[in-house]
Image (cartoon, rainbow, N blue to C red; front, side, top):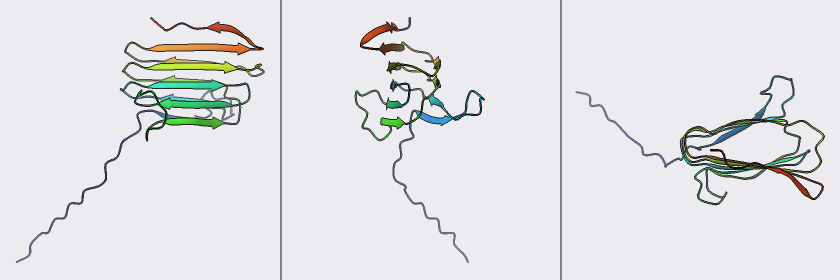
Length: 139
């Protein structure tokens, strides 16, 4: 008589990132200088600091006020001029802040979908020691 022996092994806990980002050619111009950020259903906070030549990305995936959790992104540096920012977030109370610093020589485009929820989008442009514009939260 044969017996089937089953063994079940418990794996360690894993947390799937709530926000993923990638660099590529998403506008079809043949140059991989675009940044795509895709969020989940949670409450997420994204901060982008862009000069004309570099971009820094900060993602607080659980919106706890810091950027140092396992699913967060803290000071991800891109040493090239990002020309298109494609941000698509899901449900939840999301916040996106974009600070553009410096004198711009490259065009920038922003495609932003904050999803459902009471979301905020902040945009500021700083040139030659003066603020040019500042966007208010969406309604």
